[in-house]
Amino acid sequence: MTEPRTRRLFMRVLYIIVGSFIYSVAVNMLFIPHRLLSGGLTGIAIILEYLFSIPTEITVIILNIPLFIGGYRFLGRRFVYLSMVGIASMSAFLYLTRGWTINVKDTMIATILGGLISGTGIGIVIKNRGSLGGTDIISLLINKFFSFSVGGIATAFNFVILTAAAAFLNVEAAMFSMVGMFVSNKVVDAILTGFNHKKTVIIVSDAAEEMAEELFRHVKRGITFLKGEGAYTHKDKKLIYMVVRTMELSKLREVVHRVDPGAFMSIIDTREVEGRGFSVDDVFKPF
Image 1 (cartoon, rainbow, N blue to C red):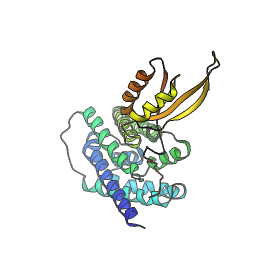
Image 2: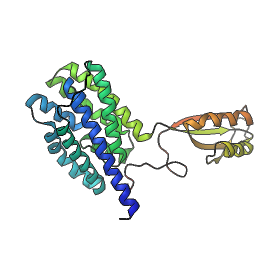
Image 3: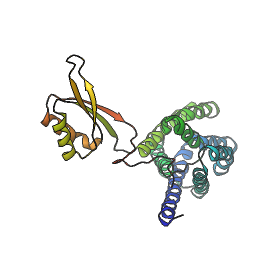
């Protein structure tokens, strides 16, 4: 393994350990003191601790063994090795931070703050090609093959856990936990997709050539001409197709309105972009 790859792997491992620490702090300092649940198999482990006093750090390892076997087959050994780092460090930090406290008396505040902190930890771990086990692995498998939102998939699995919490604990704990999971999943999605979302822009203008030159000069993004035909006039038209970051949208609008105030412009939310000019941050990209 070359030196840059070794350095990159080291940094991934370091970030995974940091992420697992952040997540463990949320569990021990906010969720457990308020008898709340986190998502995934850790949530099941917390339920077992509430009911039978089985330490969470032990249960999460036992529950994750079969999922690691499945992940090794479908997601590759690199992912499983990094996930093992995540689950091992999380288990260690759950033990080391047990008894840590934070002065938050309001359960709703603890729920939201716990969701923000735990989502940050999970997002950092997944961003660096690892996981904290449990439904993370299942979510990434479904995301790999069907491109569904990782946070959305986790929400569906967590619904089952919340139902169990309502049955074995109480409805209030389940409802508060649901809010925390929702916040956590939103934070995970924000970290994975980035806060600076992309927009696909399609522009129809009779001054397409001039507009493309101005957009090249001021927005500095790649442009593709698409061939079109007016349905009413049957005139050939050039459509401008480009993808920009949200922060570049105001500059793009300014150029379009200056060159052709009557131009038609369609702006579409774009979840993922790969290629020149945009960083590729695929979870399954090799080291």
